[in-house]
Amino acid sequence: MSVLVQEQAFEVREQYEQVLSNSPGAALVAFTGYVRDICDYGVVEALELEHYPGMTEKVLDDIGMAAAQRFSLLGWRIVHRFGVLQEGEPIVWVGVAAAHRGEAFAGCQFIMDTLKTRAPFWKKEHLKEGGAIWVASKEQDEQREREWRDSTL
Amino acid sequence: MSVLVQEQAFEVREQYEQVLSNSPGAALVAFTGYVRDICDYGVVEALELEHYPGMTEKVLDDIGMAAAQRFSLLGWRIVHRFGVLQEGEPIVWVGVAAAHRGEAFAGCQFIMDTLKTRAPFWKKEHLKEGGAIWVASKEQDEQREREWRDSTL
Amino acid sequence: MLKVRFFSLIREALDCEELNLEFTTETVTIDDVKRRLSAQGGVDWQDVLMQPNVVHALNHRVVDSSQALSDGDEIAFFPPMTGG
Amino acid sequence: MLKVRFFSLIREALDCEELNLEFTTETVTIDDVKRRLSAQGGVDWQDVLMQPNVVHALNHRVVDSSQALSDGDEIAFFPPMTGG
Image: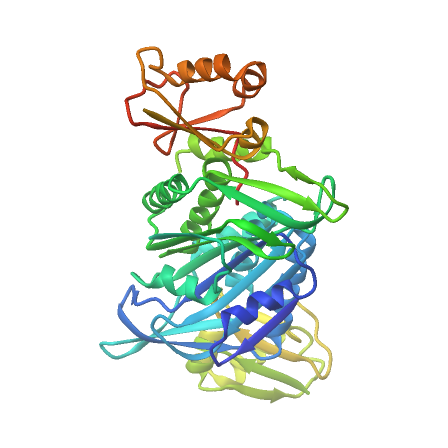
């Protein structure tokens, strides 16, 4: 039931404990996203993440609460970093707990799909060859978010 | 690309490192299953897990390799405990890494659904009120495994 | 007074992070704000702000550009999000 | 020789973890093994082994009960799995 937006790295065991802190739950699904090593324009050296302080926390909290209600989650936590991250570093961690695994998988996927298009983060890829480019939003991500809106699940 | 079957508890951070050890991957999905506190017959004090040493490792390895091929996984790890576990303790941890989150979610779910009906583990619930009962297999689990077999994904 | 903030590509293109705009009867909606900023910033600002995929937020919520404003509001303009 | 193992509910019902059975021309399939064990163990063993949901493994793989056997094989009988 909590959001953490920070520049520093995070300890994965602590995040599991946070998700389970209120209610045990029998199933926990956790997604971690890492800085890719390759992008459409070359080899990635670092990823710069800009965000909108104040709005970010509010949107992530809305998304987590919507997921909790829709999938009967017993616990959830969204961790998202900003600033400059090196290749291979974790960017985002989303963990959800539920009584059954189906709800846990769906709840975690819903949060990720919604966060991608709704949380105010913007990625800029710094290339090994020099130069940097803002990542364009993906039509596939928009499509996934629309599917959740249209679905009755 | 590895299976761990043991009685002792496991450290979650080490499991993440194992999944990522061969290839970084940009998306990691991890499922953890815990001992429930309530079952159909009352309050659970402990769960006893019997398994078939030798066959267990082979089946889990087959499932992991099938998932890796079907969902283009870059890494996977299946950890399953046996013996007597207390309420709230982790039983199983399945982590998979892929280039994209869709494959990672599907790969992890496939492993869990297949493991439930194909890996030779049997659960016996010890009740707080006294007595113990073998857990019956669920038609829903069989159904889920059949759906993967019928699906072309 | 309205607080106007810019992020990512839009912040870079305008070379501006934030500005204040007087709240008047001519800045009743987000569309009005865009028109006023385009008029005072010139053709460069107009090109950036009038792009069809610009996202608008009012007090930390994404809204339609026809959204009505109140004195003291915080508005933000940014490209589609790419987090996660 | 065939090694025969029992797990979970079946192990408890038969009060037997493991036994060895001579490999003969009458134990060519897993069905043959079930018949022989039922004959020598009596009606209790027959009730347990002939249940329709009994799972059969041959050398650590689940197989059909009509599966042909070789000398030295390990066979196992157990209820549907409930791991995870």
